[in-house]
Length: 159
Ligand SMILES: [Zn+2]
Ligand SMILES: [Zn+2]
Image (tube, rainbow, N blue to C red; front, side, top):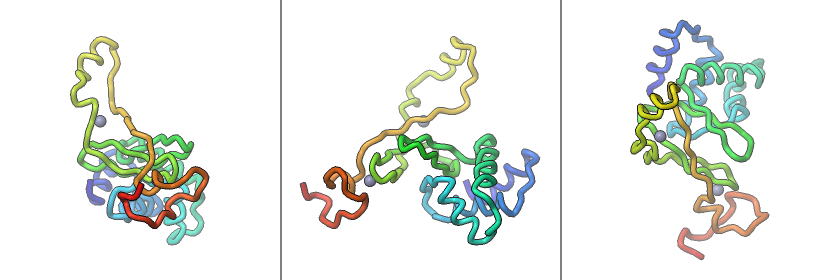
């Protein structure tokens, strides 16, 4: 989803595009690649331009954007939620338990599931699902327990 489409969807939903909200979207778009970010990380970027915006305001706006399905909230096991823009391609994530890196994968295990059938059987309207795979990224998997993440300087195929 492009920035302009995001704004269009907000307008259509009757939401005001406040400068803060615009800046939150910029923070999410800004990285270019779709890297899920925590509210704290987004806040850090937003206050570069709007120093008076509180973390609370960022949280509230992220919640609105999540409700509008413009932003997805990922529940990671480190207890910190991460947010990302809902890009066109539906995807899931590989999440590193050590450094929190989240990599998108296009594989969806629910493609083969008959969602309509579940909806009919359970009389439940399904709107979205979440599915994340947890493990260790290529940097962290080579590091002994207890070391800082992301400091490994060897080659990928070193065992
Ligand atoms: Zn890692
Ligand atoms: Zn899926």
